[in-house]
Image 1: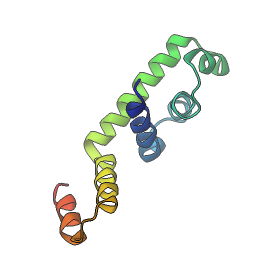
Image 2: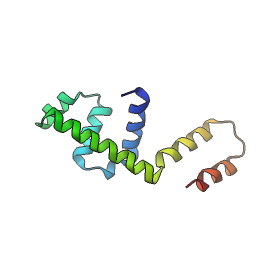
Image 3: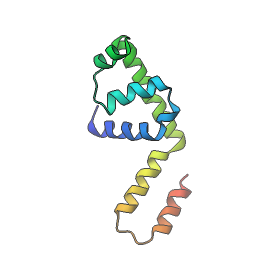
Image 4: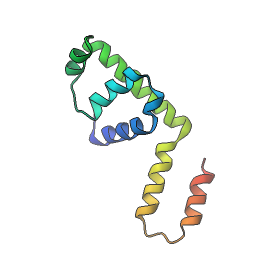
Length: 101
């Protein structure tokens, strides 16, 4: 997984983590934010490495599904970019972002 992918997943977890099951959230948090290996997580959870891999895949897919429907990450990114730009016309830029919803 690339650094960009990891950062995006971490941000998606921050945005949508409460919509995951506690187990999915914990496994994904340990993998992404705590930089634990599949084996380490499996050992801590007393399950197989394959079970952790399956849980990670499902949790990631759920995060991407939530984003495709709610678009909070996209909106957050656009707003961050706007704040970091030298644009004077914030009102029209924010209006464009809202219209895209």
